[in-house]
Image 1 (cartoon, helix red, strand yellow):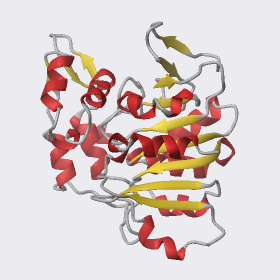
Image 2 (cartoon, one colour):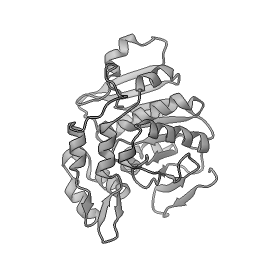
Image 3 (cartoon, one colour):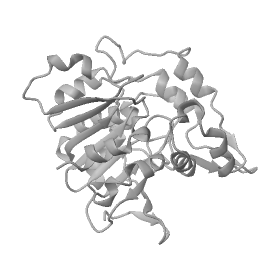
Image 4 (spheres, helix red, strand yellow):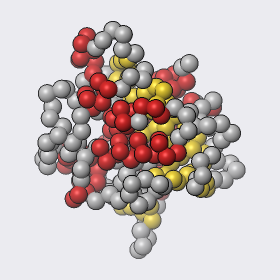
Length: 296
């Protein structure tokens, strides 16, 4: 266990909660620690925009029977306390820089670096920056847009995802009411009730006058859709660890499959589109997640 790790867990809980600092900015990265605690970390997992590491507890549980998994809360999400000002955005490199620094500070041996959506893209970019800490990449519907897309200058204030994030309900009287309000709605329509309960557990915090509010503020979530300022294609060209990509059949932001014929046949990259899935593939097919993470 790395020095400086603090855990908060109950004997009945299969997950442990941790926080680690030592990064460039003041604050700590929070994470859910799943699986056997008597072994080094096997997997570091990063979540989608607006979500949190804890939302994937039940999704990651099958793989955590044999692997130790740290599911992080990225900057501006969950219980992570790094600064997150939506008016002072740099772009997704903020997350990948955090992740690369976290790996170098707290991971002793190369791990499987995994992520969903934005978390997949961030994992890819961090792997290019800290290759000595990554033995394999496992990405679930990462946001890797077509090469013609200019992620460096994008600012789309009227994009549907931006507007949708800004309209997201942020306040709830309690956790039970939050779960009831989210089941079957919006991005949660294909999630199980347990997955939504996990999201609520890790994604709400108390407010001074009572009730709960989203830890990832709508303005922060929207800022991640508004400006990316990153080049995942450059990272893809630099990474030489084996890469496994599981892509959604419907609504996928992952354009790698369109360029697969251009890839070097000797490059260890495997791309598969999972039939019947949407962008929230991990929630819809936890079996696919388990298979991709636990393969030899």
